[in-house]
Image (cartoon, rainbow, N blue to C red; front, side, top):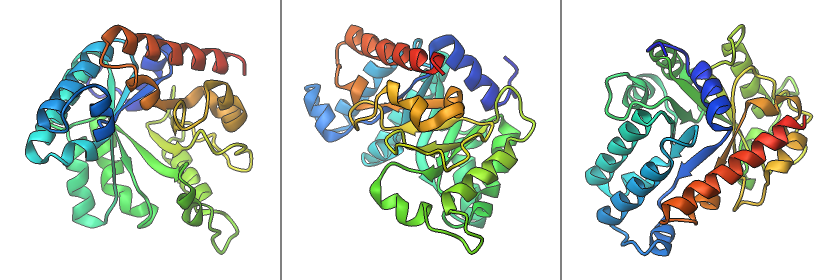
Length: 281
């Protein structure tokens, strides 16, 4: 693949080859305990290395939650840097779940942290918050284009509190969430096979037919597994856009650790279920 092949093109190829699945790497203290690990840097490193070695060459996309590494300070960040490098070396795509959002030079600095090619935390894509106005994301959009990376913008999240902002109506009668989707459709116009600018849309939200999810870009869909949604629910939630859905599973896979064979089996089952659901549309 070309160094600057777009994230959307790399994502489409990875999903077609490895299956449409994103595994979240969320080392909660409770999950470390379930694995018999200590809630410290040593436990964090053992947990992360186990996930990377078990799944790095099998799963299409990984979503490390930065906060669970940041809580251990610089040593935790070092574990995250190594995980990003190892996952990408194994052929996995990394979506850094950092949900950054700010204005001006601060947003530019966040973008350089995760989207600059020579950064130790360079990731294939970054989750971002647009609620200082979509235009505040411009430094990240510009650097993502330059680096062949992507963004996932919070649009319709599954947490109940999100609705008070995302479903609020503008003066023109369009909701804030719908506005974010429209911006992303503009970013992805004429992209092939798929744009690099995606939305975060919860798989637990039920019927979303009132929203235009056809943004010609990926839809990162948390909520499969422990949060209650299933692969079979995806066509009803996402409709014709379901082929571009990247379902995220965290605890549903990770609870099978630390046994590597069990982790691989769980990830494969979820990927197969999603493939089957998408093929039915």
